[in-house]
Structure formats: structure tokens, C-alpha cells
Image (cartoon, rainbow, N blue to C red; front, side):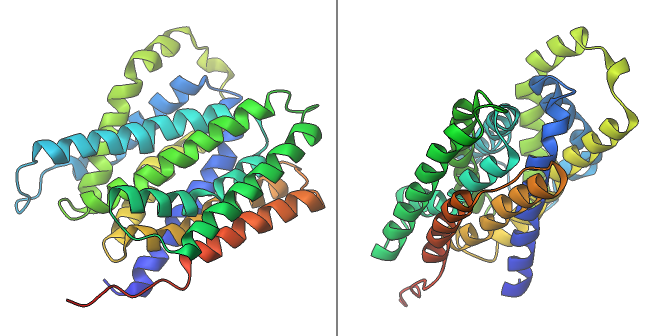
Length: 299
């Protein structure tokens, strides 16, 4: 795959993630979180039914690959969705956007630990910038959003947990792309997500009054399901096949930018000067983490 095509897939994937993170706010106002997650995976399972078929050239799945598929779904789909949906219901979309700007630094850190990619001083400085930016925003958020979001501190904490899950998703996904094609990965981890959310999903299904759901909410739910479980995963895994995990981390910057932009543009959220500064510091970490990469050693 040509580098520009891989980069386009990665950037588009993260922009879609950022859009549905922000647009999930009106959905969590209508659906209970676990019911929303279950409906998402259920709709996507129907949409990706053809992708579940095992290709003729695919080797039998090894136990280690099956374990990684489960972890990819548990961390990248299940835990990310639960932490993000609960998190954005307690805080603002722009708050989530700023915190999510730490993802590239977290990807770099996890790549060093699990993929043995070397972290240079530049990468360590990037992680420091991300921490400073998040810390500054957290202190501002506590005072500025406490009236409209009294549980903003907990929401921000849950979004931080989602950051760790998303980074693990990127690192594990890189390993999976060497064994399975992107469509197969997307369909299998979505199926695991459906299984994980079914117990609580069915519980809320029996209690929920669907008469309160408007046509526009159903349309937004379908977009959320297709974007979150199908398109973003396929695009991300396709792009990952052409780049290293820590290089892919640069494109996660599209996630917070997209989320924050939608929060300001569609939900009337306002970012103060200090919040913009916090965002800028976090984004400086993104630039440091994803530019000036060392060329791999030749053997």
C-alpha cells in the first residue's frame, strides 16, 4: 500500500471516531449506555455479516491470535465505548476532545512497552507535554464546567481511561494485521463486542420504552453503529498494514480535533483562552511524538 493511502485511511478513521464521540452525547441522553452499546454492535453485526466469512487463504486462528482478538474487542470496543459513553455524558465534548489529544503519546508509550519500539528523548518530551496539557485542562475544567457538568471530574477520568484503551487498540491492531485482513478483524472484534454487551443490553432492552426514540435518534444510532464498528475499524486496520504503530499514532490527533470542533459547532460549547492553551500544549506533544522519527536500522 502506498504511504499516502495508508495515511488517508488512518486520518479518516480517527476523524470519524471523533465525530461519533461528540455525537454520542445526544444518544446517551436517549438510550441507557449498555443498551446503546448493544444496539451498536447488533446493527454492525448485520451490516458486516458478509465480512465474517473466513477467506480461503486464511490460516487457522492460533490461540494467541484468538486471545488478541478478544483483547482488541474488550479494550478497543467494549471498554472504550463504555468509558467514553459514560465519560461524555458527565463532561463536555470539548473536554473529551482535549483529553483525547493524549492518545498519540500513549500509543508511543505502549508501542515501546509491548512492541519494543525505542522511545527517544523526543518521545518522552511528547508524553510530558500531553500530561501537562491534560493537567492544565483538568484544573480549568473543574472550575469552569462544574455548574453545567457537576461530575466533570469523573467524566474526564473515564475519558482518560478511554485514552488508554484506544492506545491498546492501536498497538494490538498492528499485530493482528499481520495475520488477518482488515474486514475480518473488524467483523470478529465486533462480534466479541456484541457478546460482551448482550447480558446488560438485553436487561435494559426489557426495561426501555422505545416510544421515546425519535426518527432522528434512530438515524444517528445507525450512523454511530456503522461508523464506530465498521468503517473506522476497517479504515484503521487497512492503514496500519502500511505503517508502524507509533507512526499511526500521529493520526489519532484527528480524534480530539474532530470531537472538540463538533462540540463547539453543534452543541454551543465554548473554549476559553486557557483551554485553547491546554489543547495547544497537548498538541505540541502530538507533534513531538510523531515527527522527526528515526529511520529503522538496516540489517
